[in-house]
Amino acid sequence: MSAYEDLEAHLKGFATAPFLFVGSGFSRRYLQLETWSDLLAHFAEMTGKPYAYYVTSADGDLPRVASALADTFHDVWWQDARFADSRDRFGKGALVTREGPLKVEIARHVDGALTRLPTEGELAQEIELLGEAVIDGVITTNYDRLLEQVFDDYKVYTGQDQVLFSDPQGIGEIYKIHGSADDPESLVLSAADFTRYRDRNPYLAAKLLTIFVEHPVLFMGYSLTDANIREILVSVARCLTSENLPRLQDRLIFINWNPDAIEATFARSMMSIEGIAIPVITVETASFAGSSDIR
Image 1 (cartoon, one colour):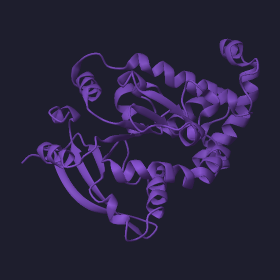
Image 2 (cartoon, helix red, strand yellow; image 1 turned 180 degrees about the vertical axis):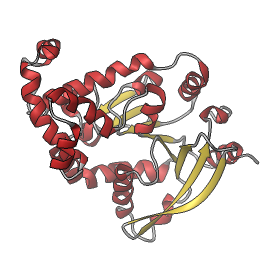
Image 3 (cartoon, rainbow, N blue to C red; image 1 turned 30 degrees about the vertical axis):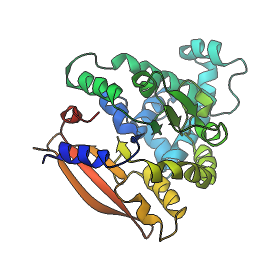
């Protein structure tokens, strides 16, 4: 059997439809959005200081880089004519933190990328097929609103608070756990944001645990080394006893795009994080459209 047939047969073995867990690689593929580092470098150019200044000031730690950049960008934003339109829209009570101006411009930048969504060719076909897929919901760390366009009838929950306290039903929903471009202050960007996020991570993991043990979860746009995913997976795994950890068996599936893959592959392996061995499945493919028969 082909890897696509293996994946189809595997998913049909579950009583529930999959959840998607979508990361930044998804937005880079379909919207040509920058990496997080390149995004910060783009806005560093507007402050009159080189990006390297912020990187070295923060010892290369990207949340701290974002904090340092946001501190400088705040004064530039309030004075520079380039941001007059943003000040008109967001400068009258909509911002509550010094980091707000940078978050506003990142949100607007990310939203603007939606105009680059492909309308023809292989990438457009992949998006069309994704919109036809039968899934129960989506979890994402992305800020952009591409997923809301693909699944336009899904209810959106933005940030940890909404996911934790708004009583999501687990069907036909999108959980934007790092915030959304339509609410700039919700973005998890700076060191302080990540501290607050990590403080609540055990509660979020407990909320996600039901999804992880009741659904197959397909990770798209993440690598196995992604720090965000590794933190979430280890938090979820810690919610389970060693006896119950096998309940994750066969449920965590990483879909990896590799343009050099001659043919798709389907393989089982173990992911070791902080001494915890988590079973995962990896599917590697040069074309997501190749699995168009999996609906």
